[in-house]
Length: 515
Image (cartoon, rainbow, N blue to C red; front, side, top):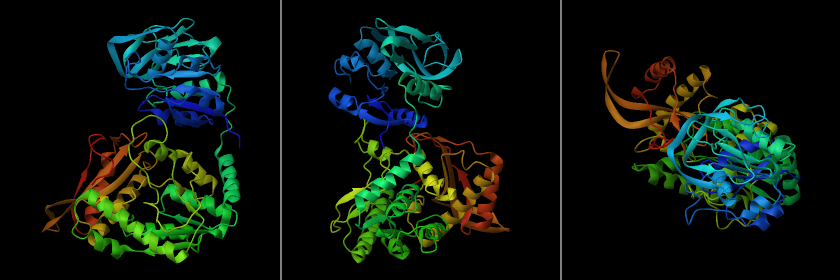
């Protein structure tokens, strides 16, 4: 399937993934590349447009990230954002200087050229997200100022004839009220994209490509039950049927009833042909975790033991031709394989590859998709919405939502508390409004009074956050009436718990998980 392509050139900006996501939301395919990508490579990809991201440096510094002037002479529309806008001005003969007043946060922007293709349909006064200490003091020759703020004389500028556009603020951030409209205007009205990047076409094409690649071969997939691996497994099932074998390792650290729910969907009684194997390995994991309190050590133990179980099951299956991973596009970017941002973490979606498994190739059918696109693909494949829109869940499971040693009894407590919390969040209509919510079990025990009797039991911590990219997060404002009901139910229904707390910590300085 031939796709219209818009390229994001990353200059180290923190919002590079957001830019690509916003373009994708316009039904236009988009990929992130480093600013170091040579012009020949860019031309060979035949992009419909190029977007330059923000960055942490000053473009006039000696060692600053840059791009050749020839980039703006390719005849391809270019949109520069923040640092990208400043760099465009500097390379084309404008001036960029340190601003007397730094702009940060929500800022009122005044549109000076309502008929600009980029600002078509945007209000004359609109709220945008600013984050800059340099400013464009003099636009490059041929550019017209199209927007300003009280402290920034060039909030936007354009050379319509050459299809070059510079925007000082960040339209990709949700705090920019009409940012998505601006990006849509650029890719549709300036670049001329038709917007035919649709999930139904992606799914259909992916199934066709998988079928052609696999042929009569055998495929092995480690199915965690999470969204990514579930969608990948179903896609493979649709493509090759019983040539696929899925191994689901239940390590006893899943949410309440989760193992049974996964088996009900993917097991023998489900509607998918994928040779489902469930390995109940709870006791094995509990034994390995006995006496271990340090969270990173727990992560390593859980990950290693998962690999051992998977290896044992794969041995029974025998040689396979292909191995399936649920890698998604943020995994690629965070692993340093796309763009210019720092390596955040390496992703090994099946926890590492067994040495003895003889396979020709790894199949990653979701490698080009963001999480929200994976969910859309899941719905296209007919996966129940309950599974597709489930709350994110870490690979080590509840093992890192229990502070201190993991025991079967502690797992029971956190499972019960978490189920109550998520149920009440859903009943309040908040399950689709918070980025992630869960209950964790602290290692704190304290005195309480229940039924006129003294108790000495554990405290549960409730967590709910709002986030755009899961790299930063703020605590969600869950209504007190909901929290109070959750507290009452947990204390009354979960044996061993006598105290409930709500975690207000943002990320940073905390993490989203509670470990």
